Amino acid sequence: MFLDNRQVAMDSVLEALADSIDYFQDNIERLRPSLRDALKPHYTERLKQMRKLQELARAHLKMLPRDADVERDDFLWLWSRLKSFVGNDSQVLINELLEQERVLMQALSTLFTHPLPDPIEPVVDECMRGCRKLIRELYNLQKRNTRR
Image (cartoon, rainbow, N blue to C red; front, side):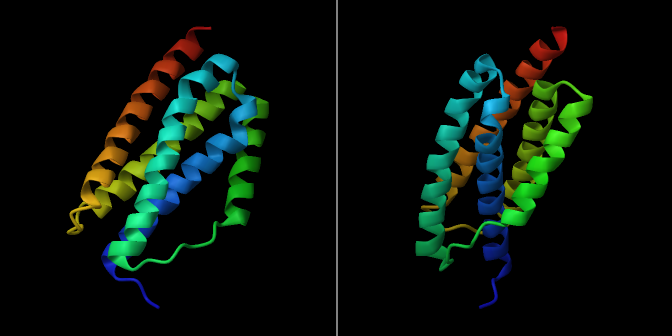
């Protein structure tokens, strides 16, 4: 089954949400406890939003769940570890998390160029606000981390 442009845009958002959650969970042990404590509530909320959006996409856009790209996830994890050898581990992770947010913001912006069913739009708005909050948090953590 081929996806229409709106479904492709939604799929990109769902993939970006899943990637950001997976990346955070895969690297949570590498974060200092203070960073982990600051970021965990954002990702807990994101997981709830992603599940709700998946459910709504199935119901209103007739989208089926897709399998994760395990090879891509493994590559991103390995690449982050390699970068950490030459730089500050926390700083590398914060930069990678910021990049995840940029990808998600782009996907959300593209999705907003399509008409969305009424039940979906507030959840996408909520994801956008959560993304903006997380970007602000990551920038604050980045500033604090570089002062040390």
